[in-house]
Image (tube, rainbow, N blue to C red; front, side):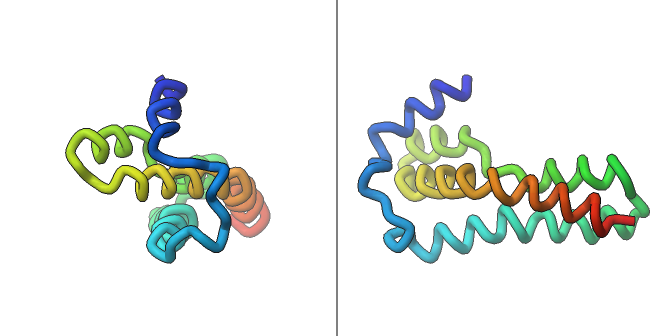
Length: 112
């Protein structure tokens, strides 16, 4: 199903014309909140409940994934800001290749 969702984004976003500087502050804010803020909040909750080891890592990985692609279809069908959502998904997915392994490493290194 994911290939069909990605194919639906092709007419909306032109990847060739995107530069890092052209991405709006709104996209960067949403990306930082999703990829860093959510795992930090979940880490605080998980540690408060006494999770450690693989359970802590599983919670952090689940919290660190990028936003869902299904929201793009919903935004497109209901008249939402589909180009914004497509850009948000693209940036979050690209950065999650770096943030998820970093979060796993941090949890293994500094976790209880």
